[in-house]
View 1 (cartoon, helix red, strand yellow):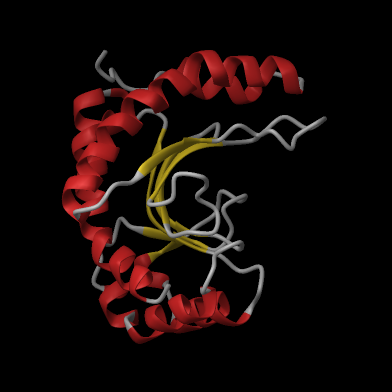
View 2 (view 1 turned 90 degrees about the vertical axis):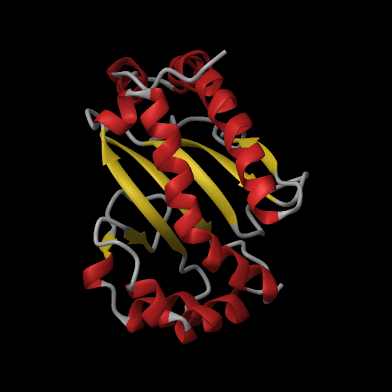
Length: 205
């Protein structure tokens, strides 16, 4: 099975009321596509890194009332979980797709990794201008690379709950979202540019 891209119907899952109904839409519309994308990107990243990585698809298992506002796949070097580890994400909100190298609040060795990024701030600033940084994976807003300041990376280091996700956000109707081949090429290219920062983080673990 080949990935054919995301449709407006996929994004419309987030407008469905009720936890069970929305989860059913996520599981039937989106997660099969995550499996296709994930399988492809696991092979790509394993080859680039020279070690095995593993696919995790968000289950939203802790939710009992409120339906999720977004959903994602994660790829990490740990088979059992990803939240404590540097990981790669692809996911959807209702109005955009995101593709991240993610360091979220449960990260082990967070301070050391953040310190390495403070030291590498000029390298981060060299990423393309269409790249963005999120300081909270639960929120849609993100900082353009050109507006990123050292204080943002220092906050990631100094504030326990602060996060750091770096990559791209693409609107629903972007050709790279709706065309499967273009998406996979874009995802590979995005991760290739972010791999040096993943590797810096892994050295600090």
